[in-house]
Length: 431
Ligand SMILES: *Cc1c(COP(=O)(O)O)cnc(C)c1O
Image (cartoon, rainbow, N blue to C red; front, top):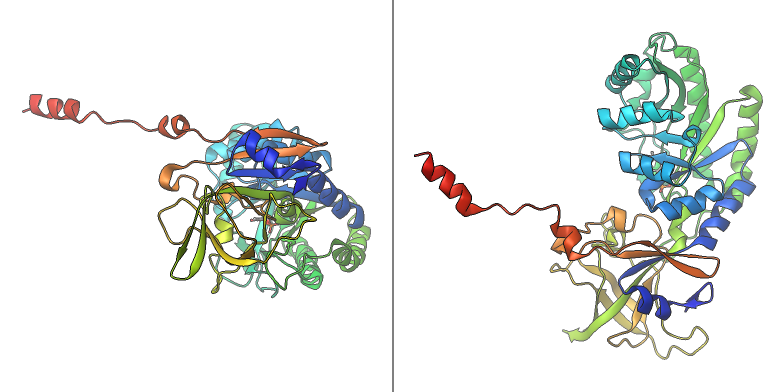
């Protein structure tokens, strides 16, 4: 199999395995298509938590994506890739002073504030520096809309301020001097595959924004409608269709824009933008049978791809996967049932269970597809101290290393060897 004309085999030989390979063409066409069909007032912000690689974000940024970040390093990544402060928002339930100060000093568009205590903190830190900072209030909605794989609303959450509390807060427009509360953010859930669910969420959020304005008197510089557009991973699923989303969303947005010209409309997306652009490439080390089942023990595992474990679902379902070094047109022969496992000493290190693959041998390459989001950064890469894999971005038919593979020195460097004899000596001399 090839990516932009390059054999995966060639990439494996050049960069080694396990390896993440990202396709810049897929990133670009996904953001371009999404922006092309959505109402022009909508701005798409990439959630860097789904893939924090600076070159991946840079590719999306070149296609018009803005940045939604949640840590100091993600903020620096966005800036390094050339995002304008005006196109960056920072969210997360436990922001540190260091992070808040970095936001203030960078002059990002908005901090998405998750509690009134945090709002007081932003006010204080901004006042100390004589700065002003736009704040969007993250609201924990009173209801959950069904249909996403992880619903956020209608439950006690560490995220955001309860809807009822915001609506009862009274005047928020003049209460703070340096924290400029001027917008609303709601994130309803992730992996939504149904356009109607996005429509219902958005309807609710736009109405809520109006109610917040009436009860608190804030300006509405921006409404962030969250996102959570999903992609298919498992049998029977289909990607959410951008055109269908646009069809139900655009009229609603048009109406909102006519009532609130100049209000920025923000949609956040991680998985939808990056998910389909990545392949996790592993090499088979050993094949064996155990009690009648075939195992391909590979050089990569769930420490780089925790999502593939399928935590949270009752039955293990497989990400789509293929044998990468088979000729696409050639007859794959009879498919067999394979468990593809990694090098970790836990039975959970199973990337694929009973997957239908051609006969495998040591040296074969397997690709776990649709792995561009929530890959290494959402995985326990330090488990068994293997570290994180290399990452390659294929752009304009050329493969570029965009992250080095962790080396043993990288993992050992931050550790400190305690000299036990020296400690003993100190204790003894103190006697
Ligand atoms: C994780 C997250 C996202 C991205 O979600 P996807 O499902 O990957 O699009 C967006 N907004 C918030 C607040 C998040 O926590």
